[in-house]
Length: 270
Length: 357
Image 1 (cartoon, rainbow over the protein chains, first blue to last red):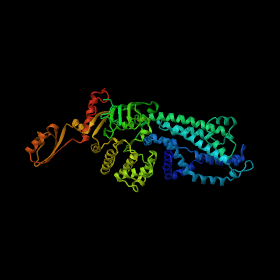
Image 2: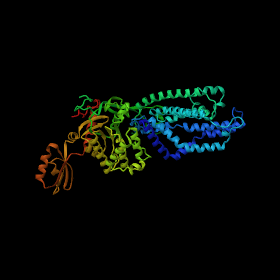
Image 3: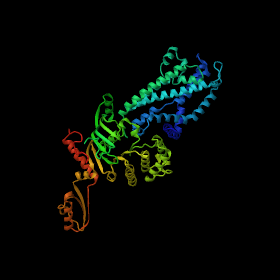
């Protein structure tokens, strides 16, 4: 086992053990992040009575996919990092010969692993409550995602998680200068909420608005992986290229801000 | 001699040259009015936490770093470990610039802070040790051997303290576990910031002995701050005293006592009570309590004064001691303050600091 594999395993082990300690909190988080399921109820009702491109079965399927995407791309690093900087508890991590970013990333994976059983139960509940989502209806066939959809969806989810993590962590680094960066990031979250397809699928946006939104990174974080998981046609090349470009750009910005931020760190209280 | 030069031919572990750190802090009056005023017109001021510090520490040396709260000790330590970037000056630890945070340096140093912990609060200390072993690339069997060795010296049990969540440990047990975690990778330079803070006497002694033993076994350099003078006197031959960000003394502990406590304490118990007036011929009378008295006598005059006391009175008991080290340090601070008042523009280190012997 290489030194890096051993380190990452050790990080995962300790973070998973921590997450198990906070299992009740994780249950509450999982429930608190079920906005897509609320949207599912709203949009299936709307689709039944309104004039939309897609019917209720498609809407249910879309928001179940969005729910899954959301569960594997939840990022909270900004809150954690802000606390570490403001309290000075970042100091012990800076003294280790490993960049702390690896530990934060692995902590997210450990938290996701810990959340799997809760998400599985919620998913089964949704599919039972909205059987049309997997059975299909007159407008859409049964939901049987092929290997391409599964692999594509998984890769898109990984890329979306990486991008969201880098976006939030880069904002988090401004805690070296500002004390409450999480509040600033709430503005970004508003954009993610409305432009990513989490509240409404891009298909219901006016064409001009949809075209404009597709030039931002937000729809590629939720709408794109959800469409792939549904087995629907999606701009695969453009999606992965957009995600890749944003990931590389943010990684560069992140490292620059990190180096500059460390100069400002005063290790308060530690 | 330049700060980087070696005194005995070996490369110093730590070289600090004209190190300074200035913080910019917000100036805000208390209360609602102060808060509103601060919101509308922010005012900042510069705090010079460290001013022109020079320091050289050789391999294997244990140096006591003394100073009152806010004197700049911890800021210097943070700069030596790379946590805080200096405003000016040069720092070199084991040939590396700490602020660059090179893994090669981080593998060889450790920082233990009495008021902060690196152990994961909600998990057993053993988990944090396993994590550190992986992070520092220590093979499992070697990590286990080192853990057992360190635990044995500190009186920790692998199945007891190491398997309990850290939050359930007493302060003393926690600090011992912190030390095991901090020393598992066998660092060559130890920065210990108040490692015995809040510990009871037994735990203090255990930690102190442990640090001394580690230094002897591994030849590690140690920079130790402590408000417990027993820690300093037990471990450090050399002390560095910092006051208001400047070094005011750097030399052997004995020299500090000689320079700032030119008088020794003579405690005497007589067969019959003698008043203060009767004892004033032997030295300055500090206190008289019945038959017991404490006198301050200039160092050179102690033999003569003791001889005269023994010949003039029936002495039951007599001891001669140096003034307590904390008293000595207080005198040094007072001296430095007095100098600061009269020489406000004196350059850094222009006070009592002198080149190392």
